[in-house]
Image (tube, rainbow, N blue to C red):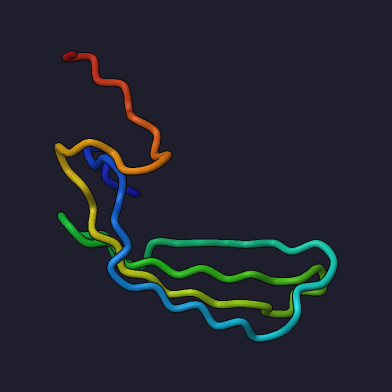
Length: 81
């Protein structure tokens, strides 16, 4: 996330469109479209070695603040502990 005070995120909505078979080396790129205080909207694309679009994803995520991280999310170190 872009918010250094968040403790991970919970997926609210995720849509993935698989457009063609992935062959060879695949490159994924993700970006945050908009980040608010509690929600983040993101997109991602996967392209093959020739630059052809293989998959496209859009997601909405709820940022977690002041809560214990879920799963394998790394715990940022706080100097105030």
